[in-house]
Length: 212
Image 1 (cartoon, helix red, strand yellow):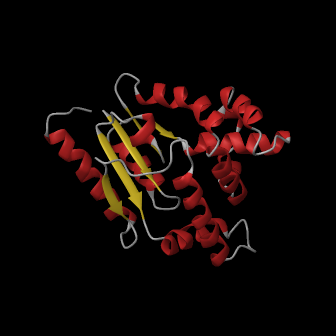
Image 2 (cartoon, one colour; image 1 turned 60 degrees about the vertical axis):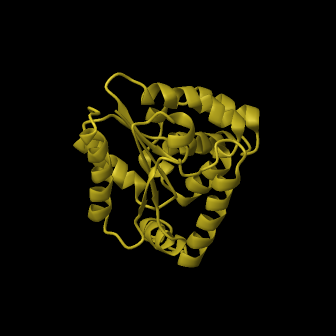
Image 3 (cartoon, one colour; image 1 turned 180 degrees about the horizontal axis):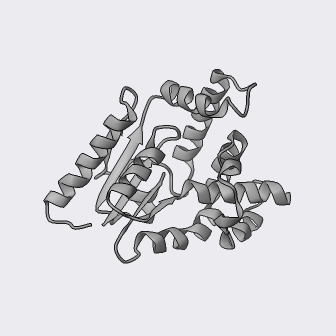
């Protein structure tokens, strides 16, 4: 079984993906980490974030084990990753890695922004996780303010709006909901309630005879 979970930043898709992967014993890839790692490596190496060839070279030889999770989760890494992810050469460089992970024997779960539309359009379960930008901004602000005390909620919301627009309008693999995806709006849901909705979507597919 292949499960594709897409959605917006701070919508809860990462937590939902982690919970579902554990429940169904599926290997999990957070594809956003690939773009964050590419961006962090570029910043560390002095490669410009609009240098297509330089960024693609980094992406082609990417080794996630060399990055600490904490350095991939900063606000700066997120902003840089959004710019890097809009570059077609980078997306092409990372496509085969993601596709191979998705199609491994026994199945897999991937979360990102184009899993159900580009990486695994043949996924058995497709979910799109979203919430309004104010709620997402508040969640992300709470997550970042401990390490970035000068960060304001207004700044976070503004950057989320910019990121949403960049992700949705990029020419290569824009972030869009697949026609056959189940939409889960987490604006007014607890994470447990959102996970239950996601599980229900998977169980509906299993009830039709698909096996994990």
